[in-house]
Amino acid sequence: MLSSQTITPSFWQPGTEILSLDPDTLASSSGSSPQIAKDTDYAKAILKSWKEDVDTRTAETTSMCTSIEYKCNNNNGTSLHGYIYRRSTVEGLEKVSSDVPGLILFHTGAGPQDMFLKWKADSLVNDEIFPDGCVVLVADIIGDKDGWAWTDRSRYETVRKLVLTPDENGERNELQSRIRAAVDTLLAQPGVDSNRLAGLGFCMGGHPILEMARMKIPSIKALVTYHGVFDGVERLSLGSTDSNDELGESKPNVLICTGDDDPFVTEQHLQGAIAIFTKVGCNCRVMSFENTRHGFTNPAQDYNPSDAFTFDAHAYLESFSATRSLLRKAFELDKED
Image (cartoon, rainbow, N blue to C red; front, side, top):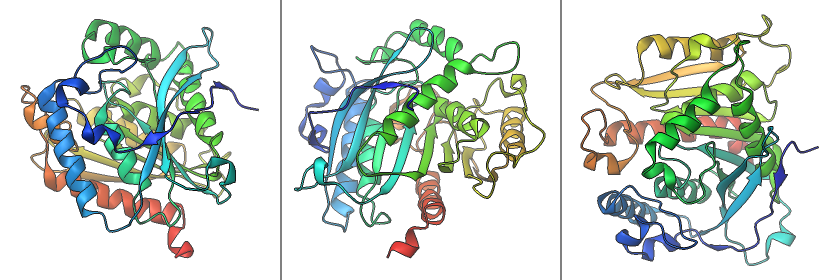
């Protein structure tokens, strides 16, 4: 039984429709359209990189996407607002039969209304490592429908604290309820293989990735963080002393991609996260990049006035190359060729 109430998407549009929009439009909220960029420079940077990505693709595939509202099974029945991406098909969703992997993308502190995540979802859906494609959910952890996280940082900090602060037992039940809602929503999509799921988290998204490992969800085969933050992990419960009691032979492979000069990821927090991943039975690998700061996967960080952020092309390419290799192995994709 699903632990969340899902509103099934009904209106689909091309996954790259954003590429035809004006940067000023993307950086503002109007009517039913949320703000999905910090400012026009941010929008221009992502548009440029996304278009370059599309131009270099060898596979003749396209994606379609839809917004989706779903509710988590917490005390308030919090509404969450994400996006579903999948390959376009002329047959229609009612005729989808093949089981394809499902991926969940967890957002940064900018929230789920971020065109960077839309680009990554479109890219993954069309990646040639997936013979029949995959289904991607851009998940929502903070309940942001219109992009308020871009401008209302006080509200963001309040919600972040609510979701990420452990209780007296070292548990984050609020975060877990939102993760379960994301997993249930993805599994409810036609054609998703319930035994082949993965989670990818950016920045704040490091927390739900760590929590997914602690939840020991058997269908999760791979977990990846990119400049993921792990503040407060020392307050988390370590749980059972038996790391293999629930996972059996299905141990998630974890990839942590981090920058040596990231001021938001201390060595103490990083080692604490690694210890938890290992403790719960995950196979953990760390890729640490020299002279690399926070947000290194996002080209728009070159326009961030803070010295703590910067885009790093080498770290970006290496981390996503490693991600593709990990997904190939975890989903046994080479056997499908």
